[in-house]
Length: 385
Image 1: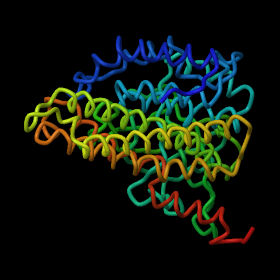
Image 2: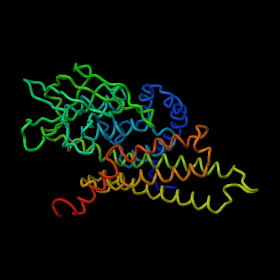
Image 3: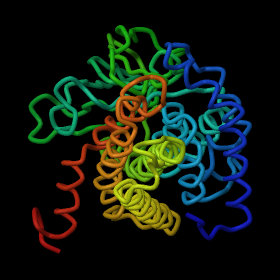
Image 4: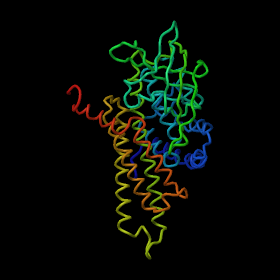
């Protein structure tokens, strides 16, 4: 699909294509084999993609969320697992800090994230609190000028490399009628009592491993509170909604890669005296796949543009996260089917794309959570609008 882009957007997309070929492609097999990609992050910073929408005063590109979506889609065509780090930096950390952080916090923390020198992990999910944050059990109790954090988190991406954890904890008393969740920046070099479990053995996204994280009387300065007490859910959602758009862009890149593989295979595969591409079924399947992904990417770009103009109802972000990963999974499945047995072997990247697309319906808010959120905006549940 030939998109209408500004000169600035086109320069960024072209730079991402060159970077993807030069840096990300060679790392695909390395991360599949379990190699730590930490050295890649500094090169991502040099490209500028760790702070696309952040202001130049913090070391960012001063670009737009639409530019970030364009960059992620292109980079995901080369290495979808490492793209997670790009949207985490921009959406899970920088976006909430820009909205809720003090000016001092922004100047102290954002430049390091953008430069790739300070890696982070979003510490939100717990064994009993995934989609339902009201089940959160990790606590932060004020003791003098510090909060003391105790609890357990799970499925925390890149906890091994992280210098800080954006940590969400309950700050209300145990007998409070409703849990008050707050957000804290917890730095490893400032805090003792943080330990990691073994990396989770997951079916995909092996370049972005997840870990359980344990907090045992971890002391955090009061000034590391992000926003006000009780703002934790808003801090998380402000980051997650940008992340949902970014996941939409990422799965479009994954699906486009699958389509490109299937097209190349169909043009070269001989069957019954013809090329596989000569069969109408092949043509129709791939045409439908391409049209669906093009439509999803246009919708994703529109959601990114809504963030650029300050739209804060986020309904479109949820719609993108609800639909794009489901369609991407369908597209990768159909493209894999066209390759027959080869689609099930590691000879082609298709099996990796199949594994990596699967998680995208779950993280940053599962498909079912997005349906729940959209129904609320529509006035079908809760207070009617």
